[in-house]
Amino acid sequence: MSQQAFQAFAQLRERLGEAVIGQPAVVEALLMALLADGHVLLEGLPGLAKTRAIKALGRELRAPLARIQFTPDLLPSDLVGAEIYHQGGPEGARFVFQPGPVFAPLVLADEINRAPAKVQSALLEAMEERQVTVAGQTHRLPQPFLVMATQNPIEQEGTYPLPEAQNDRFLMKVVIGYAGREAEGDIMRLVRAEEGAKLAAASAASAANAASTPAPTAAAVESAAEGSALVHLLDARRAVHGLHVAAAVEHYIVDLVQASREPARVGEDLGRWIEVGASPRGTIALDRCARAHAWLQGRDFVGPDNVRAVAHACLRHRLLLSHEALAAGVQADQVVDRLLAAVAAP
Image (tube, rainbow, N blue to C red; front, top):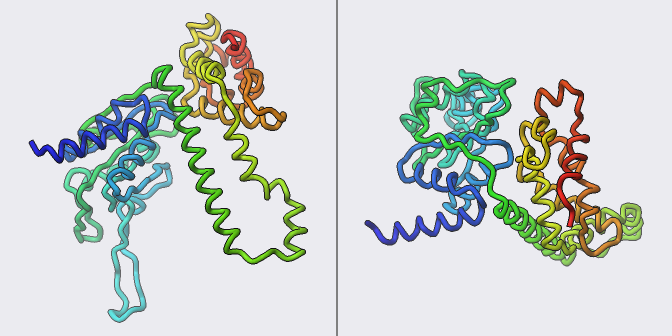
């Protein structure tokens, strides 16, 4: 065993685990696929860090990443490329191959089952033989070449099941679920830290730009005064990010989201009404919006009432109600009301 190679992959696993919290199976699958020269199909609900995982892998490997959003109107040439007719140039008029996004070491096929089989089949040769053939010409793909495809198990309207030949070209199919309660809080804090880093970078860029920009004219000052809220937006965002969120309030946010995923635990009616609960994006949305709501009220901390004030707006579109709830005329707002009543506030 090459000790240096082993250490390098151990460090890679650790860094990916820090970037993709609560999904060790995804990290393990990506590393195994990379080592075994295969491809991975991830099946899971929205917001479970599928895209984040492949982006983190590309960042750590310093390898280009191509993201292809599969839609019903996608064409095979949108994936593999096409022959383009060039009229000018020293060689005269000719057809030139224009590579598609599949010519990247890491390819994210996002929601692969949203495109028909004709488009999915464009990946067959690429995944199996590491090449594509267009207009009779064969073009080799880069090495390494890893396809990570995602699909949503709950939305079947407007989707096209993967043909057996397509399924069989994936080295592994990994079914992922929600992270645990503790990991959910870690995700919220990680995203908040990343948000702070982005604000710091934006502030530095703004300061550098101001230093290199000539003094504004009177007209420009007057124009800026008219949009003063926009002028102070970055400062306001930093202030919102800096608001104190107590551990008890963080736990309250996580408890609300967890209750939407395990509704039978907090209420019999909720257990019948909620088919699928909120994703980690719901946790992040509650955290962000509660801080913004508190700041607009002139506070320097976030309280449970701020979380409750934004709960409907952050959760109503993230809850998938059951057929029983829809048949009974139950609205998403009523379900959020029940969740707020069932989960004790600190």
